[in-house]
Length: 367
Image (cartoon, rainbow, N blue to C red; front, side, top):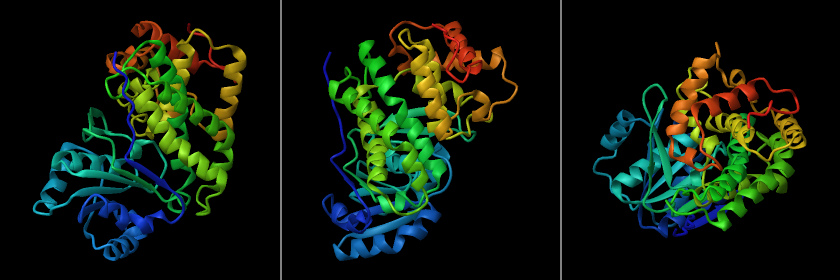
């Protein structure tokens, strides 16, 4: 099978790099549309306009709101009708990032990410998710190429509340274990090719950085003052995690978002918290995890405040029917094939039961 490794054209990270945005836009062309929600516009609009003016870039700034749905995209498409752009810049969190990718995809324009939170690794990836009005996942779509630029102003990221960074850590935490399973199963990465050793290595390095710096970085969230540890943690959450999953591959933990998004209460939880829980289910299914491994990981979850049960994600009235309703769409997801052995609904339900009944040192083994 062919190997494919993909990455953004340029990743730029550091305090104050927002003020170089005009320089990066000019490398793509003389016209840009910048999308951001209204709160983010209050933080960045004056600096964006000043940077673009200094480099001779014509910029149109448009506010975005709400979920990434077909109706919302149609409304935005209408508002942007007649406005030409060589590059679409999405500034904000995951919803705005995905909205920007969708508009860029439709127009055939370059795409640039300017994340203001580190709640997931969407800024570096080519894929984006469309939901229905009830926040149920409808489709995962893909840009033809990776983002042209990813611009990460860590002084902005460090202003964001702790909850966003916790979700980003939860999302990134899964990538080592999912990439390993994809490689072991000879599965496909996000480019429809075999897992690259480079992607798997980056996912493993990401995990190491998370374990080393997550607690320190969470303590600094909201301060606006990024330390060296915070900078390294953000690189892991955005860049290492993004490259790791796209070129290494995904497995059960991310497949479970197809099922978890069906559950009221859980579907509203941030993506990173959903997959952090789902990682425990994946690990309960794996054959080579011992009690010491689980005790260590569960202790890490407890120190950070990551969810270990469906109830912690917001589920109520948990029963076998709910678990089966999660398992069925999970196993229909393409990533579910990237596992060391074939799984049944009963296997996945048993793993969830094991996680739900876990002691502080880990799940009652399901495999």
